[in-house]
Amino acid sequence: MYARKVLALFDFDKTLIHGDSFRSFSMEASATALERVIVYSLAVACWLGLIGNKTYKEQVLRRVWAGVDASQREQFLKGFFSRLHERENPRVVAELMRHLRENHTVAVLSASPGFYLEPFVHSWSQDIRVFASQARFAMGGPVVDNLYGEPKTKCARELIEQLQPELIVIYTDNISDLGLIQLATHTRLVAPSRQLTRALERANIAYEVLMP
Image (tube, rainbow, N blue to C red; front, side, top):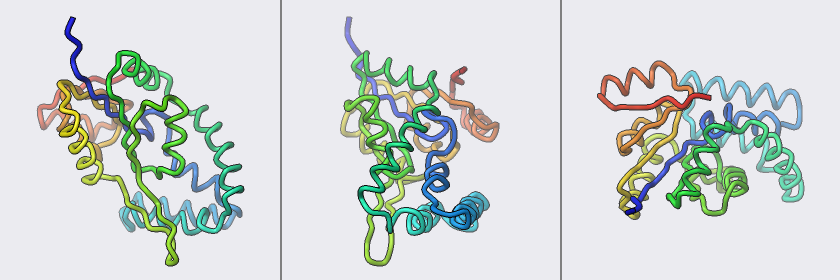
């Protein structure tokens, strides 16, 4: 039987894992109670639209990560990865593994920073392609190339143009991925908001909701 070329695209936060990994990272990496209050306030400001997603990440990394040496970072990430594994969404991770077994191309696209996202995702399989926000630590502080919104859609579009798949399946929870959904042939939603499902219904985009 002819095997079709399939590309499976996965969001990370609230899709492959429960919750927001960067918010957890920022709180856990905070050295003091005051620092935790500050990074929580930054998260609220981002949620309210008072600061952008890129600025939010840069401000958090400046406070909790830029001054941490390599050995401390490595030790922290070991514990952080262990806690992230406890928050895996088993239904969605099982779908990711199924795609790999069927020799589909699997990619995880996320606005979370690559310095923790890439090694964590590769703990599932080295065959997964990972596209994430990249943080550079310059003299003026962290600079984040943020893979969120249109840059994330552009990344997916370039991957599709490179691979020329016949089927494109996307797994996501977030309306910010609407651009990716419009590129897909199959959409599988994970605990979607009503805002997202209404947007897809208005656009006449069919979708399936993954049950736990």
